[in-house]
Length: 166
Image (tube, rainbow, N blue to C red; front, side):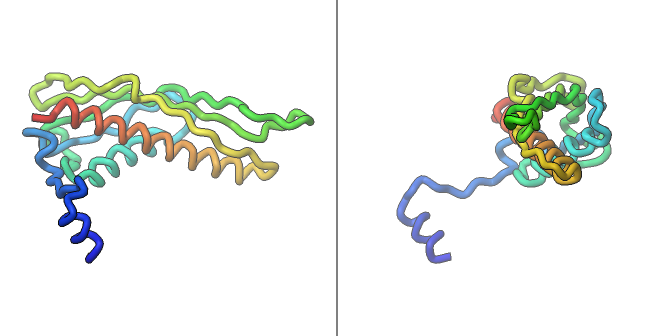
């Protein structure tokens, strides 16, 4: 606590922010589970969970289940996920994979107007290690998908904050 007080009193540039003020008149968001156009069962839930977690982490918007009660509704789809081998051994075994996820999202106000989201920020790649143990490779892939979904969610809320700033 003493370090925090010292930083604040030293005028180091840090300041306290109230998360709610950064989104203008939008206070409630509903996040619909996106459609899954990929062959990865359940990835739509991973993306929806990442979007909800990021909204709660920032604290600027309150997540509600009922889209009629929301000021803003996020919806969309997860496009097919592409996995490619990026690193191969001399005996033609894949050592590392790269996974690419792209999500198409739209944000709509209660009255139906669309709020633009930076579409370029809705794609992300991540590398993960392969293993002779298929279960380890599967878990590494799942973790890479969670990381990618989280990165996309961060960009979505950055884009929303820029579009909603007063």
